[in-house]
View 1 (cartoon, one colour):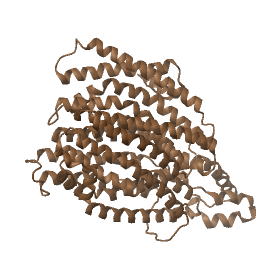
View 2 (cartoon, helix red, strand yellow):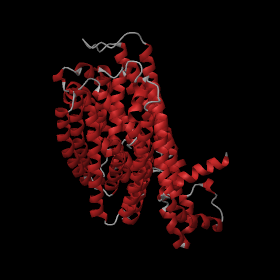
View 3 (cartoon, one colour):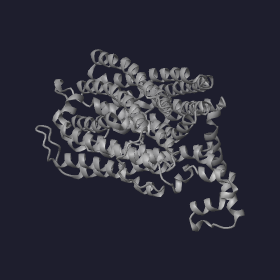
View 4 (cartoon, helix red, strand yellow):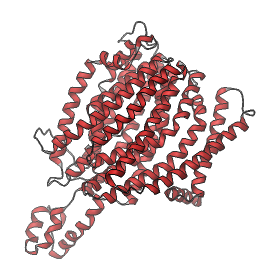
Length: 602
C-alpha cells in the first residue's frame, strides 16, 4: 500500500527542493540588485545593507545542488529511517493477518475475505495504481522547474486523479458480483462466491482511499519527504488489529449458508478494514501542510497531461497483463484444496516482509534521484544509482532467502498452527514459503528496473517484459493444477510466481543494457555471485544442523518448530552473512561498521 505514491514553497523536509533560480542570476546585474531584493524578499528577512545581502545571494546557488541531488549520506539516512518505519509497518501488517488466521482459521471465511480484499487492489492498480506508483514522482520532480514550482501542475494532476478514482470506485462497487465471478472458480463447490461478494461490497470503497494515499505520497516523495508516508501504514494496521479484536469478542459466527449481509461480524470486518485505509490516507495531511501544500481544484489543461496519459496507457496495459496472471493464479488456488488462496496470501506476505523493509525503502528513497538524473540526461549517474541499489539488494536479500529456505516450514507451524488453523495447513504454508524464497532478489530487481524505465519516461518496455513473464507463468499454472495433488497446488503456484520474476529480472537487465550501454554489470554480477555463494553455504549449514537435531528435538509440533526456527535460522544467517564479511564485500561495510560501533559503545 505504501508504494504509491509539488509543488509550493515548501517548509520543513521539503524546503531544499525549491530551486531559487532568480536570486542566482541577480549578481550578474549589480545595478538591479536593490529593487530585486526589495520586491522578492519579505521585510522579516533582514533587508539590510548591500554587503550582508550579497552573501545570501551568493550562497543560494551553492545550496541548490544539495537540494536537488541529495548526498549519499542523506540517501543512506533516508533509507535507514524508512527501513525502521517499514519494518514496524510490515510487522504490524503481518500481526493482523496472523490475528485473522487465529480468529477465523485458514478455511472458507479466510479465503473469502482474502479474495475480496484483493479486489480493491486489483481495480486500483488497473485504474491508476501502477501509474501513480511509477510515473507521478518523476513528472512532479520535473514540474518543480516551473516558475511556480509545479503548483499548478500538481493540482491539475490531483484533480484528474481524484475524479477518476471517485468514478471508478462507484462503478467497481456496483459491479462487485461480476468482479467476484472473475476471480473465483465456484465450479468445484470449494469457494463461497456469495461471501466473497458480501465482503467486496464493504471493501471496494478502499479504491478511492488507496488512490488518495498514493497521490499524496507522490507529492511528498517528490520533495524528499518520506517519513510520514512510511509511518502511516502502521496506523492503518493498528486500526485493523483493533477491528479483528472486536470481531473476536463479538458473539456469533459469519453465516455461510445463507450468507447474510447484516451479520455483525461480517460488517465489523469489512467496515473496519476499509476504515484503516481511510485513516492511513488522512495521516499525510499534516505533512502536506508542513511543506506548504494546499490543494485547489484545477480543471485547466496542461500539455504535459498528454505525456502523463501516454505513459498511463502503457502502465495500465502492464497492470492488466499482470492481473491476468493473478486472476488465473487465484482461480487455480480456489479450485485446489480449501484454504489455498489464504495460504498463498500469507506465504507471499512473509516472503515480502524482508523486501518491504529493504526493497521498498530503497526504491522510495532512490526514485527522486533516478528521476532527476533522467531529467538531466545524466545516464552515468542513473547507471551508478541502479548499480548501487542492485548490489545492496543482493547482499541483503540473498542471505535472507537462504534463511527462509531452511526455516520456511518451521515458520509456518510456529506462526499459524493456532486457534482455528491446523498444523497441516500451517506446514503447507511454510513449505510454500521455503520453495519460493529464491524469488526474493529477482522480485526486488524487477521492481528496481521498472523504476529506472519509468524515470526515463519509458512505460512501453516494462509492459513488454510483463507480457513475456505472463506468457511463461500462465501455462505453468495450468500444468500445476493438472499435475499436482490439490493440497500441493499452492506450493507449485508460489514456485511458479518466483520463477516468473527470475525471467523478468534477466529480461530487464538485458533491455537496460541495450538502452544505456555499460551498466557496471561485472560488479553487480560479482556481488550477486558472492551473495549466492554465501547463501548456498548458509542453506547447507542450516540443513546439516537440521539433520543433526532431528533425533534430539521434542516430538510436539510447535516446540519442535520453534527450536528449529531459532537454531537453524541462526546458523544459516550467520554463515550466509559471515561469508560475505570474510570475502570483504564492500556493500556490507556500512552495516558492519554500524554494528561494530554499537558493540564498542557497550
